[in-house]
Length: 299
Image (cartoon, rainbow, N blue to C red; front, top):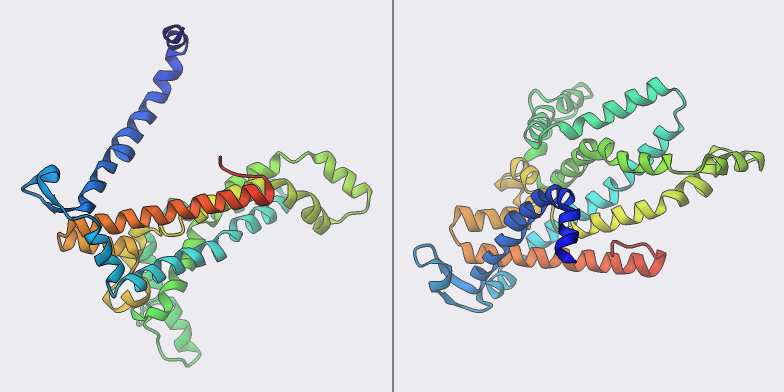
């Protein structure tokens, strides 16, 4: 029976095979490396011959003076990105949905999508140019109104604002795609009935549009909360410098310096495992809360 079902669905199995191989090779097989976080890993001895040390590297990390700093930085960057970045695509999608001129609507959508296709390297290069203390546009404007130039990229107090604001600009248009798709699924008869009852655009948005896309909003919010401690390594790595470590150094950049720069692989793996557990706990808690409150969840 099982073999017959395999034969009948062989084309479907062939289609899903590349995805299964991808997850096996690049997601599940590397999890074997977690072992070295419990060992005093030596490259020449290998994983199995290295000595077991139990939770020593986890204790090092929890007792490290850097622990609270990088935990706070990672949390705040992720929290601010969700707090300010998550509502932005919803608002933009609602505004785009209200545009009646189809050509202008497509133009706004296209322009808002473009920053998503710009790499982090280009984004950071643009930030460096715009925020330059001598030739940057922002400082030129400040000079015109008689203010002193500001060295934005070497001041820790500006790093989070720069990171979050540029992230919103980069992702707001792309984030609207799912919400616009959800908006097209709303039954237009609901709007017609509301118009007959005298509802304006604002009331239709509050009582029809938002409740209709609420399950999508909740699912995406759960996914965002699940990656709160997984802030983009690439962008932070390109944007930060030793002068901004106070607010910019996060778990992934600290792991990079510890593991690849200093060669302490066991310690770096322990930090990475801790980060993964944090994200899993947050995802599970957010999903549990969403299921209890709104009966909407990922599983």
